[in-house]
Figure 1 (cartoon, helix red, strand yellow):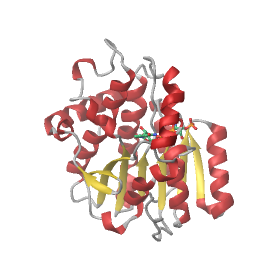
Figure 2 (figure 1 turned 60 degrees about the horizontal axis):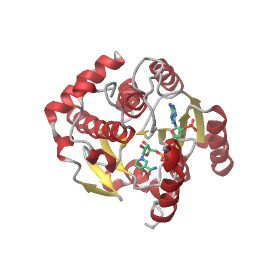
Figure 3 (figure 1 turned 135 degrees about the vertical axis):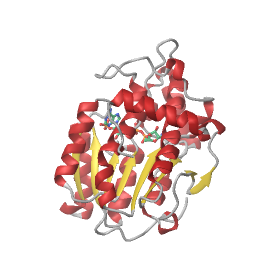
Amino acid sequence: MNPPQNHDLSGKTCLITGSSRGIGYETAVSLARMGAHMIIVSHNLERSKAAHQRIINEFGEQAAHYYVANLSVQDQIHQLADGILRDYDRLDVLVNNVGGWYRNFKQSADGIEMTLAVNHLSYFLLTGRLLPLLEKSTPARIINVSSDAHRQVSGIRFDDLQFQQRYRAFAVYAHSKLANIMFTYELDRRLNGSGITVNTLHPGFVKSELYRHFGIATPIVNLAAGVFGKNAEQGAETSIYLASSPDVADISGKYFADRKPQESSPASYDEAEAKRLWAVSEELTGFIYPI
Ligand SMILES: NC(=O)c1ccc[n+]([C@@H]2O[C@H](COP(=O)([O-])OP(=O)(O)OC[C@H]3O[C@@H](n4cnc5c(N)ncnc54)[C@H](OP(=O)(O)O)[C@@H]3O)[C@@H](O)[C@H]2O)c1
Protein backbone atom coordinates (compact mmCIF):
# COMPACT_ATOMS: atom_id res chain seq x y z
CA MET A 1 0.00 0.00 0.00
CA ASN A 2 1.22 3.51 -0.82
CA PRO A 3 1.97 5.89 2.09
CA PRO A 4 -1.04 8.01 3.14
CA GLN A 5 -1.40 11.23 1.18
CA ASN A 6 -1.49 14.46 3.15
CA HIS A 7 -1.89 17.89 1.61
CA ASP A 8 -3.49 21.01 3.03
CA LEU A 9 -6.94 21.40 1.47
CA SER A 10 -8.36 23.84 4.02
CA GLY A 11 -10.66 26.35 2.34
CA LYS A 12 -11.27 23.98 -0.60
CA THR A 13 -14.67 22.57 -1.53
CA CYS A 14 -14.91 19.19 -3.25
CA LEU A 15 -17.97 17.44 -4.65
CA ILE A 16 -17.92 13.66 -5.20
CA THR A 17 -20.79 11.84 -6.87
CA GLY A 18 -21.58 8.36 -5.58
CA SER A 19 -19.91 9.08 -2.25
CA SER A 20 -22.23 7.33 0.19
CA ARG A 21 -20.05 4.21 0.03
CA GLY A 22 -17.26 2.43 -1.83
CA ILE A 23 -14.46 4.32 -3.57
CA GLY A 24 -16.33 7.63 -3.52
CA TYR A 25 -16.86 7.53 0.24
CA GLU A 26 -13.22 6.67 0.95
CA THR A 27 -12.12 9.52 -1.32
CA ALA A 28 -14.39 11.89 0.62
CA VAL A 29 -13.03 10.77 4.00
CA SER A 30 -9.41 11.33 2.92
CA LEU A 31 -10.09 14.76 1.42
CA ALA A 32 -12.03 15.78 4.57
CA ARG A 33 -9.04 14.64 6.62
CA MET A 34 -6.90 17.10 4.59
CA GLY A 35 -9.29 19.90 5.58
CA ALA A 36 -11.57 20.12 2.52
CA HIS A 37 -15.30 20.71 2.82
CA MET A 38 -16.95 17.69 1.20
CA ILE A 39 -20.19 17.59 -0.74
CA ILE A 40 -21.56 14.04 -0.61
CA VAL A 41 -24.00 13.00 -3.35
CA SER A 42 -25.89 9.76 -3.75
CA HIS A 43 -29.45 8.68 -4.41
CA ASN A 44 -30.10 6.78 -1.20
CA LEU A 45 -31.15 9.14 1.60
CA GLU A 46 -30.22 6.84 4.48
CA ARG A 47 -26.78 5.98 3.10
CA SER A 48 -26.05 9.62 2.21
CA LYS A 49 -27.02 10.71 5.73
CA ALA A 50 -24.95 7.96 7.30
CA ALA A 51 -21.84 8.84 5.22
CA HIS A 52 -22.29 12.53 6.05
CA GLN A 53 -22.72 11.73 9.76
CA ARG A 54 -19.55 9.61 9.89
CA ILE A 55 -17.54 12.41 8.25
CA ILE A 56 -18.84 15.19 10.51
CA ASN A 57 -18.41 12.98 13.61
CA GLU A 58 -14.75 12.63 12.74
CA PHE A 59 -13.89 16.03 11.26
CA GLY A 60 -16.54 18.44 12.60
CA GLU A 61 -19.83 19.94 11.50
CA GLN A 62 -18.28 22.07 8.73
CA ALA A 63 -16.51 19.12 7.08
CA ALA A 64 -19.39 17.96 4.92
CA HIS A 65 -22.84 18.52 3.50
CA TYR A 66 -24.97 16.06 1.55
CA TYR A 67 -27.43 16.17 -1.33
CA VAL A 68 -29.67 13.36 -2.46
CA ALA A 69 -30.05 12.98 -6.23
CA ASN A 70 -30.75 10.09 -8.55
CA LEU A 71 -28.08 10.80 -11.17
CA SER A 72 -29.81 8.66 -13.79
CA VAL A 73 -32.51 11.37 -13.95
CA GLN A 74 -31.56 14.55 -15.78
CA ASP A 75 -34.08 16.72 -13.88
CA GLN A 76 -32.44 15.63 -10.63
CA ILE A 77 -28.97 16.48 -11.98
CA HIS A 78 -30.29 19.96 -12.81
CA GLN A 79 -31.84 20.29 -9.33
CA LEU A 80 -28.55 19.19 -7.75
CA ALA A 81 -26.59 21.70 -9.84
CA ASP A 82 -29.11 24.46 -9.00
CA GLY A 83 -28.66 23.63 -5.30
CA ILE A 84 -24.86 23.73 -5.51
CA LEU A 85 -24.85 27.00 -7.48
CA ARG A 86 -27.26 28.49 -4.91
CA ASP A 87 -25.46 27.22 -1.78
CA TYR A 88 -21.78 27.57 -2.71
CA ASP A 89 -19.62 30.36 -4.02
CA ARG A 90 -16.73 28.07 -4.94
CA LEU A 91 -16.01 24.53 -6.12
CA ASP A 92 -12.37 23.51 -6.29
CA VAL A 93 -12.68 19.83 -7.14
CA LEU A 94 -15.40 17.84 -8.89
CA VAL A 95 -15.02 14.06 -8.82
CA ASN A 96 -17.45 12.28 -11.14
CA ASN A 97 -17.30 8.88 -9.46
CA VAL A 98 -20.84 7.50 -9.62
CA GLY A 99 -21.05 4.21 -11.48
CA GLY A 100 -23.40 1.33 -11.93
CA TRP A 101 -23.50 -2.09 -13.54
CA TYR A 102 -26.89 -3.26 -14.82
CA ARG A 103 -27.28 -6.93 -15.60
CA ASN A 104 -30.29 -6.46 -17.87
CA PHE A 105 -31.34 -3.72 -20.23
CA LYS A 106 -33.26 -1.01 -18.43
CA GLN A 107 -34.06 2.60 -19.11
CA SER A 108 -33.85 5.69 -16.95
CA ALA A 109 -36.86 7.92 -16.32
CA ASP A 110 -35.66 9.88 -19.38
CA GLY A 111 -35.87 6.75 -21.55
CA ILE A 112 -32.09 6.37 -21.81
CA GLU A 113 -30.26 3.07 -21.29
CA MET A 114 -29.32 3.12 -17.60
CA THR A 115 -25.54 2.54 -17.85
CA LEU A 116 -25.13 5.33 -20.37
CA ALA A 117 -27.36 7.61 -18.26
CA VAL A 118 -25.54 7.07 -14.95
CA ASN A 119 -21.97 6.32 -16.00
CA HIS A 120 -21.52 8.81 -18.82
CA LEU A 121 -24.34 11.34 -19.20
CA SER A 122 -24.37 12.25 -15.49
CA TYR A 123 -20.65 13.13 -15.76
CA PHE A 124 -21.30 15.14 -18.90
CA LEU A 125 -24.32 17.09 -17.64
CA LEU A 126 -23.22 17.76 -14.06
CA THR A 127 -19.79 18.96 -15.21
CA GLY A 128 -21.36 21.28 -17.76
CA ARG A 129 -23.75 22.76 -15.23
CA LEU A 130 -21.01 23.28 -12.61
CA LEU A 131 -18.43 24.69 -15.01
CA PRO A 132 -19.21 28.36 -14.16
CA LEU A 133 -18.52 27.66 -10.46
CA LEU A 134 -15.30 25.78 -11.25
CA GLU A 135 -14.25 28.70 -13.49
CA LYS A 136 -14.81 31.10 -10.57
CA SER A 137 -12.62 28.89 -8.35
CA THR A 138 -9.56 28.36 -10.55
CA PRO A 139 -7.19 26.60 -10.25
CA ALA A 140 -9.82 23.86 -10.18
CA ARG A 141 -9.79 20.14 -10.96
CA ILE A 142 -12.22 17.69 -12.54
CA ILE A 143 -11.67 13.97 -12.08
CA ASN A 144 -13.64 11.32 -13.97
CA VAL A 145 -13.52 7.81 -12.55
CA SER A 146 -13.27 5.36 -15.45
CA SER A 147 -11.96 1.78 -15.60
CA ASP A 148 -9.47 -0.41 -17.42
CA ALA A 149 -12.60 -2.28 -18.57
CA HIS A 150 -12.74 0.39 -21.32
CA ARG A 151 -10.10 -1.70 -23.17
CA GLN A 152 -12.71 -4.40 -23.80
CA VAL A 153 -14.51 -2.37 -26.48
CA SER A 154 -12.99 -1.10 -29.71
CA GLY A 155 -14.93 2.14 -30.00
CA ILE A 156 -18.16 3.99 -29.35
CA ARG A 157 -21.15 2.15 -30.82
CA PHE A 158 -22.86 5.03 -32.56
CA ASP A 159 -25.04 2.59 -34.53
CA ASP A 160 -26.53 1.21 -31.27
CA LEU A 161 -25.39 3.62 -28.57
CA GLN A 162 -27.99 2.39 -26.08
CA PHE A 163 -27.53 -1.32 -26.81
CA GLN A 164 -31.16 -1.78 -27.78
CA GLN A 165 -30.25 -4.43 -30.36
CA ARG A 166 -27.96 -6.60 -28.25
CA TYR A 167 -27.41 -6.03 -24.53
CA ARG A 168 -24.34 -7.58 -22.94
CA ALA A 169 -23.77 -6.02 -19.50
CA PHE A 170 -19.97 -6.17 -19.55
CA ALA A 171 -19.68 -4.58 -23.01
CA VAL A 172 -22.21 -1.91 -22.04
CA TYR A 173 -20.27 -1.09 -18.87
CA ALA A 174 -16.93 -1.07 -20.75
CA HIS A 175 -18.46 1.20 -23.39
CA SER A 176 -19.56 3.71 -20.71
CA LYS A 177 -16.04 3.70 -19.25
CA LEU A 178 -14.54 4.38 -22.71
CA ALA A 179 -16.99 7.29 -22.95
CA ASN A 180 -15.59 8.64 -19.61
CA ILE A 181 -12.10 8.77 -21.11
CA MET A 182 -13.13 10.27 -24.44
CA PHE A 183 -15.19 12.88 -22.58
CA THR A 184 -12.12 13.70 -20.42
CA TYR A 185 -9.81 14.13 -23.42
CA GLU A 186 -12.29 16.27 -25.34
CA LEU A 187 -13.07 18.39 -22.27
CA ASP A 188 -9.33 18.91 -21.77
CA ARG A 189 -8.98 20.20 -25.35
CA ARG A 190 -11.89 22.61 -24.77
CA LEU A 191 -10.68 23.78 -21.33
CA ASN A 192 -7.19 24.52 -22.54
CA GLY A 193 -5.86 27.61 -20.74
CA SER A 194 -8.92 27.95 -18.47
CA GLY A 195 -7.17 27.08 -15.20
CA ILE A 196 -9.30 23.93 -14.85
CA THR A 197 -7.62 20.56 -15.27
CA VAL A 198 -9.42 17.32 -16.08
CA ASN A 199 -8.06 13.80 -15.67
CA THR A 200 -9.46 10.29 -15.62
CA LEU A 201 -8.43 7.10 -13.86
CA HIS A 202 -8.71 3.40 -13.24
CA PRO A 203 -9.08 2.70 -9.49
CA GLY A 204 -8.07 -0.98 -9.78
CA PHE A 205 -10.09 -4.12 -9.08
CA VAL A 206 -11.84 -3.08 -5.88
CA LYS A 207 -14.09 -4.98 -3.50
CA SER A 208 -17.25 -2.86 -3.42
CA GLU A 209 -20.96 -3.17 -4.06
CA LEU A 210 -20.49 -2.56 -7.78
CA TYR A 211 -20.58 -6.30 -8.42
CA ARG A 212 -23.88 -6.99 -6.63
CA HIS A 213 -25.79 -7.20 -9.92
CA PHE A 214 -23.58 -9.91 -11.46
CA GLY A 215 -26.23 -12.55 -10.67
CA ILE A 216 -24.82 -15.99 -9.93
CA ALA A 217 -21.29 -14.64 -10.55
CA THR A 218 -21.60 -12.11 -7.68
CA PRO A 219 -20.18 -14.34 -4.91
CA ILE A 220 -17.28 -15.47 -7.14
CA VAL A 221 -16.36 -11.93 -8.21
CA ASN A 222 -16.67 -10.72 -4.61
CA LEU A 223 -14.42 -13.55 -3.45
CA ALA A 224 -11.87 -12.76 -6.19
CA ALA A 225 -11.99 -9.05 -5.31
CA GLY A 226 -11.49 -9.92 -1.65
CA VAL A 227 -8.47 -12.11 -2.38
CA PHE A 228 -6.81 -10.38 -5.38
CA GLY A 229 -8.37 -6.92 -5.35
CA LYS A 230 -7.99 -3.74 -3.35
CA ASN A 231 -10.23 -2.56 -0.56
CA ALA A 232 -12.18 0.66 -1.18
CA GLU A 233 -9.61 2.73 0.71
CA GLN A 234 -6.83 1.50 -1.58
CA GLY A 235 -9.13 1.90 -4.60
CA ALA A 236 -9.57 5.59 -3.70
CA GLU A 237 -5.84 6.37 -3.77
CA THR A 238 -5.59 7.60 -7.37
CA SER A 239 -8.75 9.75 -7.04
CA ILE A 240 -7.32 11.30 -3.86
CA TYR A 241 -3.97 11.89 -5.57
CA LEU A 242 -5.56 13.61 -8.56
CA ALA A 243 -7.82 15.70 -6.30
CA SER A 244 -5.14 16.87 -3.91
CA SER A 245 -1.52 16.44 -4.94
CA PRO A 246 0.53 19.48 -6.02
CA ASP A 247 2.42 17.06 -8.34
CA VAL A 248 -0.56 17.04 -10.72
CA ALA A 249 -1.67 20.65 -10.32
CA ASP A 250 -0.79 21.39 -13.97
CA ILE A 251 -1.42 17.96 -15.48
CA SER A 252 -4.54 17.62 -17.61
CA GLY A 253 -6.03 15.25 -20.16
CA LYS A 254 -4.38 12.10 -18.82
CA TYR A 255 -5.47 8.60 -17.80
CA PHE A 256 -4.02 7.42 -14.48
CA ALA A 257 -3.75 4.15 -12.58
CA ASP A 258 -1.88 3.61 -9.32
CA ARG A 259 -1.16 7.37 -9.25
CA LYS A 260 0.77 7.21 -12.56
CA PRO A 261 -0.19 8.34 -16.05
CA GLN A 262 -0.88 5.39 -18.37
CA GLU A 263 -1.76 4.92 -22.01
CA SER A 264 -5.47 4.30 -22.47
CA SER A 265 -6.79 2.20 -25.36
CA PRO A 266 -6.09 3.36 -28.96
CA ALA A 267 -9.83 3.98 -29.50
CA SER A 268 -9.93 6.47 -26.61
CA TYR A 269 -7.57 8.86 -28.47
CA ASP A 270 -9.80 9.21 -31.55
CA GLU A 271 -10.57 12.95 -31.61
CA ALA A 272 -13.21 12.78 -34.33
CA GLU A 273 -15.10 10.09 -32.40
CA ALA A 274 -14.79 12.12 -29.16
CA LYS A 275 -16.32 15.15 -30.89
CA ARG A 276 -19.11 12.96 -32.21
CA LEU A 277 -19.75 11.56 -28.72
CA TRP A 278 -19.82 15.12 -27.37
CA ALA A 279 -22.45 16.17 -29.94
CA VAL A 280 -24.59 13.09 -29.17
CA SER A 281 -24.25 13.75 -25.42
CA GLU A 282 -25.44 17.33 -25.93
CA GLU A 283 -28.40 15.99 -27.88
CA LEU A 284 -29.29 13.35 -25.25
CA THR A 285 -29.03 15.82 -22.35
CA GLY A 286 -30.36 18.88 -24.16
CA PHE A 287 -27.41 20.76 -22.64
CA ILE A 288 -25.14 22.81 -24.89
CA TYR A 289 -21.75 23.51 -23.38
CA PRO A 290 -20.56 27.10 -23.46
CA ILE A 291 -17.09 25.91 -24.58
N1 LIG B 1 -15.10 -1.58 -7.88
C1 LIG B 1 -14.26 -1.74 -8.89
O1 LIG B 1 -13.56 -2.79 -8.99
C2 LIG B 1 -14.11 -0.69 -9.94
C3 LIG B 1 -13.18 -0.92 -10.97
C4 LIG B 1 -13.04 0.05 -11.96
C5 LIG B 1 -13.78 1.21 -11.91
N2 LIG B 1 -14.69 1.40 -10.91
C6 LIG B 1 -15.48 2.65 -10.91
O2 LIG B 1 -15.36 3.28 -9.65
C7 LIG B 1 -16.55 4.08 -9.40
C8 LIG B 1 -17.06 3.80 -8.00
O3 LIG B 1 -17.42 2.42 -7.93
P1 LIG B 1 -17.57 1.60 -6.57
O4 LIG B 1 -16.92 0.29 -6.80
O5 LIG B 1 -17.19 2.42 -5.40
O6 LIG B 1 -19.17 1.37 -6.61
P2 LIG B 1 -20.26 1.17 -5.43
O7 LIG B 1 -19.66 0.63 -4.19
O8 LIG B 1 -21.37 0.42 -6.08
O9 LIG B 1 -20.73 2.69 -5.11
C9 LIG B 1 -21.47 3.39 -6.05
C10 LIG B 1 -21.87 4.73 -5.50
O10 LIG B 1 -22.69 5.37 -6.49
C11 LIG B 1 -23.96 5.71 -5.94
N3 LIG B 1 -24.99 5.56 -6.98
C12 LIG B 1 -25.25 4.48 -7.74
N4 LIG B 1 -26.23 4.76 -8.61
C13 LIG B 1 -26.60 6.05 -8.40
C14 LIG B 1 -27.56 6.92 -8.97
N5 LIG B 1 -28.38 6.53 -9.96
N6 LIG B 1 -27.65 8.19 -8.49
C15 LIG B 1 -26.84 8.61 -7.49
N7 LIG B 1 -25.92 7.83 -6.90
C16 LIG B 1 -25.81 6.57 -7.34
C17 LIG B 1 -24.16 4.76 -4.78
O11 LIG B 1 -25.04 5.39 -3.89
P3 LIG B 1 -26.27 4.73 -3.08
O12 LIG B 1 -25.76 4.47 -1.71
O13 LIG B 1 -27.27 5.83 -3.10
O14 LIG B 1 -26.69 3.50 -3.82
C18 LIG B 1 -22.72 4.66 -4.24
O15 LIG B 1 -22.45 5.79 -3.44
C19 LIG B 1 -17.52 3.76 -10.52
O16 LIG B 1 -17.47 4.76 -11.50
C20 LIG B 1 -16.97 2.45 -11.10
O17 LIG B 1 -17.31 2.28 -12.46
C21 LIG B 1 -14.87 0.49 -9.91
